[in-house]
Length: 265
Image (cartoon, rainbow, N blue to C red; front, side):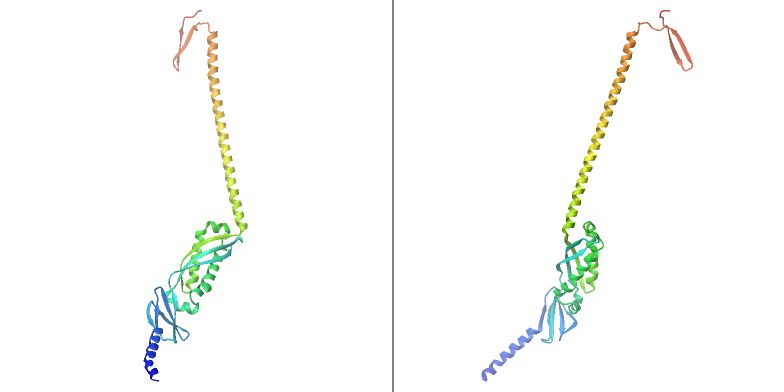
């Protein structure tokens, strides 16, 4: 009995230490504490730092309010009924001022992803892709991203979740569509090649025509020059060296003169 009495103070001290330790709650940087009293979520939200609670009666559930990154998968159909699968990277965080209500209505971070984030991403992607055909999605990727980001932010904000950024990665279409795109690209390249060959042939033909025209004009000028020279030569061959008896010379438009030259009469 004496031994028990001797050890009682130590036991009491140990119990006190345990109670004090159980009463202390430390909320780490980037966290918020949700206070639950006998199973009921309190309006109080614990900020970072040291706090005290009533053991057994009060439980503190810690949630991170730091930026989180989740890579989700969304499957949808386009306007022209092409099925696609896309990876969606979402950067989000819990609104620190709504931590207790989020925990009360949704749960912790894992439950937020499963119950809110994943369904919201799938719904928004389906709604946006249904307005576009497959080729438009490839061409208007930036517009699609902006639309998904805007609609997703509207949905998540209703739950107290702040959406910071969305990235669309790894768009995957069906094998049939990929084959059709490849065949179309090959056809376009072949059409461009054929057009280039046709344009080249046309330019070469026009060049040949211009060369032919130039040669023809050169021949004409040469023939003209030769004809004039031949006529002059024939004239000189037939000329007897005699000048005409008179030569008509006009001083102006209204007067002509007849001048004797001195040839035979």
